[in-house]
Image (cartoon, rainbow over all chains, first blue to last red; front, side, top):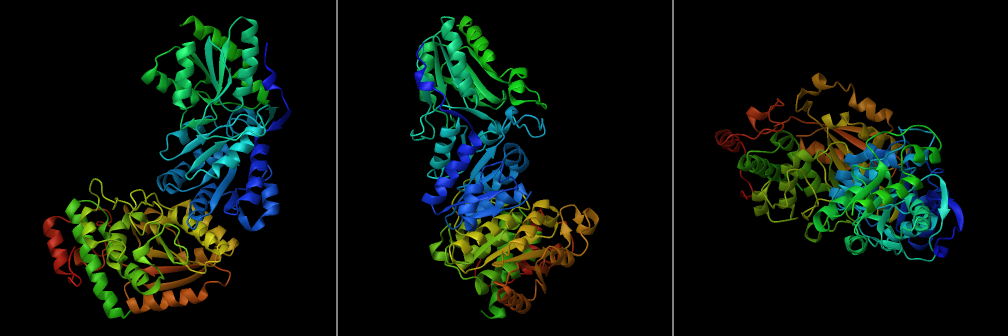
Length: 319
Length: 280
């Protein structure tokens, strides 16, 4: 099988991609400022802090205040990037984001690490699986969930050029880094990673690599899948999804997020409105996570490579 | 500007408040009336602003954030009389399609409003952010805010208070509308807060106090506050006011926090407030 384009360059965490992108923005865009709520090391923001101490704001364990300060920093032309865990970036400060950022349409970039189950041992208090839903419901908000180090770095750089609120979601563990490091990140543009004809697999975040792994297994079983990386959940590249579904006639979505409110939810709405088709969703089904290793949790909560394979086989039978 | 002239403006502002909330039978007259003297003085006598050329960034201008957004009628009236927009637009308050939303918002582009407020406790953080940007930009103008006393029950206020003093955000002058009232009653009955002055001092702020209905005192206190900026500490003014000030039956009660007067009550109220600049 031809999978050359997906050679693993190395294993890196997506949060380090954010740190690298932010560091580069520090050099290239003097309006970029950064805020952190006592998780500078975890968010990999140290390089920016060291290079630009005057443009870095340590706010302490006070996320609501951080979001408000970020909204205020835009008044006068700054481009603030806030950094904390995804749970504290969204659920904890939903009303602050809603009023001071989204409704006020401020140019704040909410950058969220340790999203989903792969945060691991800290357990369900920290494993937010609702953040994409929370953020995509907000008018004016762009929601981005890149899949590897290179893409996260490119996305971080790209959102500085986008005028408006952005939620950028990434994670903790080291995962395969496989996308082209020189590829320009285009907000709102789906990335067709592999063309196929039997089933469309649409994945986001850490599940993109798992979709690639699944496609190898499916090919061995004689199933030819199309794989789409949706790094921008909102605005959704409806055209790309519909074009693929018109060919394959069935869809699997895969994400490290709750089924309610996630990528699969967005795709199902689109299909119901414009191209009713069988759909299987690989996502966490209405339950909290628990402590454990990231890999163990992905398997236990059925959002792993074998789950994508099984979903693809099932959805094809429903055509 | 002379105190007499400021008083004439605030009388008209109070008339506008009554007429605006009565016209749509909704809105918050009590706190609005109580802050009319303060907002008039800040906007007409103290802030360095360019109302005819409003920009969101407000570079080289003083900024004002109304954190207790529910007293939007007083803000809108003062903004209109100060020249941000035509006073005839006050007649659209809270009506479908209006730029004058129930709570202030930049969403429909009303000049003079830079952030949405209404959900309480967020304005101080936003003001601090804008004050930090002024410092980064080498802009030595001042950021003013107004907060309700009940609003201080929101935890985010104290996160912001801690941040501002800890990081020497000394280009901000916050004011507390200390009228002792909130929707459910007296603040001491709803949630006693003890000494506000001691709380702000303990959080590292310079604390001033003033009578919010004595325009000479408002002027002098704001002047004093301005001389205290740039010295490493944020400044807060605890402003004693009477909710409903200027309309006898609305004073000294929380009843008019968020309730509009009937037409008859509005007529009674307007008979107590001199029309000085012409009704909108």
